[in-house]
Length: 180
Image 1: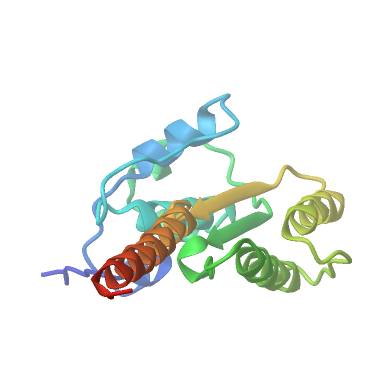
Image 2: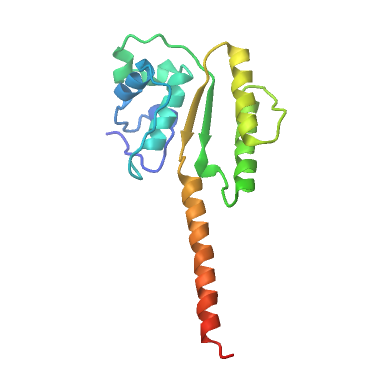
């Protein structure tokens, strides 16, 4: 009997440990064959989005051996390796615009190092553009960008804003309680 793994979103480790994997590669194939440039996976929490994004990463990195026995292995697909920028916003600090930019910059530098590249700029949007250009020049292939937990910075800022509002309201209440 195969182990049921929870809380682990690494396709490669699940396959290599022969753990139970619910085959969603039919959807990987549909995405790969589509003419659309952008996809948004909008599902509830704990629905397997991170595992699916990680599966896409292994697929686009051409790790065909991991897909043996899965649906996509029965498809007419030319297995090619593409440069992949995989950004997990769960690991990105987003307490402010500055911390978001800096943390995202570190993540982009990590990806650049994986491909033995150097980034010259220090602003995350320019770093991303620079990284895409360098990867395209190095491999002469389209660059795949996978972003996981894209909504974390939004929720982090909402929580920060809510905490600030709570402090302000508490201060107002305390002021009202004081006698002048």
